[in-house]
Length: 171
Image 1 (cartoon, one colour):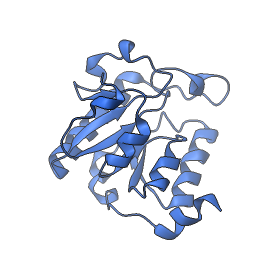
Image 2 (cartoon, one colour):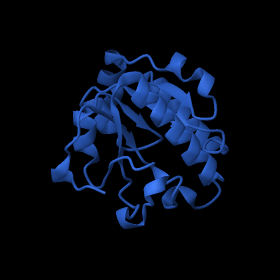
Image 3 (cartoon, helix red, strand yellow):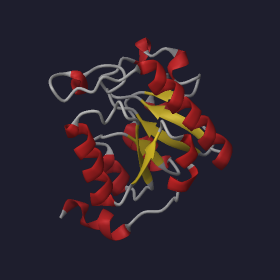
Image 4 (cartoon, one colour):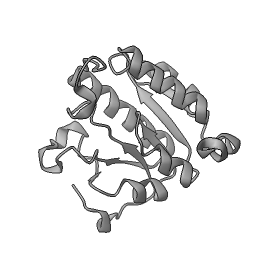
């Protein structure tokens, strides 16, 4: 993993990791989806490879602050660059952003970055998680990408922002 002051990569997009796949707050209680990690990471990396080929951009990972960088296995992200404690800076410098539900959506709005909400059927298997995804999508007019459905990926990748919705996010 790389620390904040060492963000040295060519043009890139960033994936803002949540604690969903690797444990943490999202996996406590009734609202906990039962995520199959192997399928999640296979499809996530397949999607990242698709993005890298389509846009000629690197995909870098902004680790969730509760995920220990020393415990992140290289094969989780197929040797992509992984950064810890610099999510805001990565979002600021990225061409666009992929995220699940995250408070980092505030940085996306602040820096007016195009963003996409990624999910799979496991991650929205609870009504709570599905509602959050839908609300974020509607509030900011963000496109959703279903990692389980690679035939739909290209259709949902229009890179733009709804400036009015971003502007009204805090009001």
